[in-house]
Image 1 (cartoon, rainbow, N blue to C red):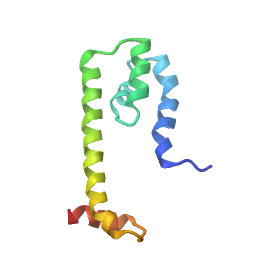
Image 2: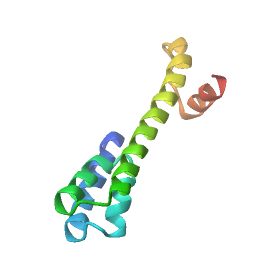
Image 3: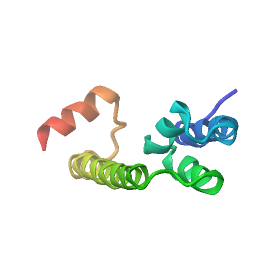
Length: 102
């Protein structure tokens, strides 16, 4: 079955729901609430079942903000070089090369 890459974090979050509902302080629940792609769903689920320590909540939000900044920075670099290469399909080695250019 074909699953788009963008949907993988959502499905990973849904697969962790049973684990979080059984024990919201387990290692998988804590890791899922700190891993940025799954944090929005898992952390809200943990907050609904049993409120996590404040340091975990702050760390989760901090990791989300840092990961958003890093993804925006990388995509801006790729866009700046890639916009000049219009009409040409980008491959993974070319993307890495573009990151080195800028």
